[in-house]
Length: 425
Picture 1: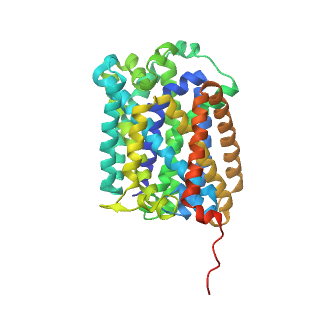
Picture 2: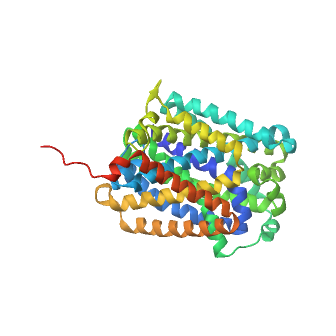
Picture 3: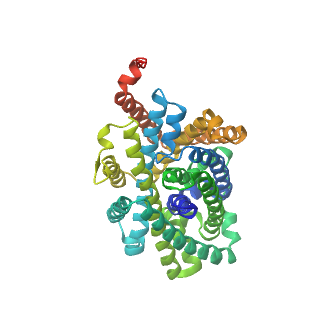
């Protein structure tokens, strides 16, 4: 994989999960302040991306985040627990983006008559198809991402150009502004829209020159996506009143195209949504495939998960099955909030790992500390908002963290209960 395929992998995961899946929910929460929310989320992503760039260049392994944690925290429950949290987060992300694909596909094919069952069925079929593509190999993943990213970015640029030329400031003026508490909570969602850049680190093992390719690809992908998100947020604010957006929250980008480009434009953008969410699923699946094998190799999952049948880790189909169960059992908003918070937790751990490894990985202290402070503030605001609005969701997050910690303790209980004997000379 080269700089373009790795960049495409990052853009594919970010754009599919962010704009097409969550732009509507973020705008409903933050109002016209969603522009500031996406900007803050982008700044935090760049600061976190700095750590990922340094670490992936120094440790170009397929495990990405979990390898950095293992290097920084080689003993104890911390690295293992956070590694399992990250794996669960990626599985939940597949469910989030899959749900969005199903919503776009059902709306495009069946219109408002489509029910949840049809949308879920279409989502399941897409996830299964993308799982098969990932079994072909990393080269196929990279080529597929470049093609999908070029097509969907072309569609989005067309929408932006058509919408901003006839921007309706009257609709924008009707959108309310929100306070800092709500804005901070909304950054939890907008950061999730950028969180896919972390999956680029898993591609470092498939790159010939990671020290050169990985930093370039990570910063290029995040910078391009920041500009794209701000432009598309303006499109939503200038074309969709709050009541109409509330009705089409899961397919907001396509709904915004209809007043500007008509039914044909709506259809084109909806197809772009299908490609975007499919490519985001593709990028996330690529990370899950690598993580299953790596976690089993490090002893953070039972060896069964790493044993291969036809060179496929057995944990991979199990992860796909869990994602399919989430698609069928939960609404989009519930699983999106879960993924947003757990991404913040996992990426905070990466910043902590970079701090401990800064002598070997390199890097300035200021971006590490500033990124950690901003991310911790957003995490706190998201938890407070979730506790007020969806206490069951907050309970689910606490339960998930507890299960990950308990599972890691059980898997490595001999290692954690007693010290290893000294090596014989």
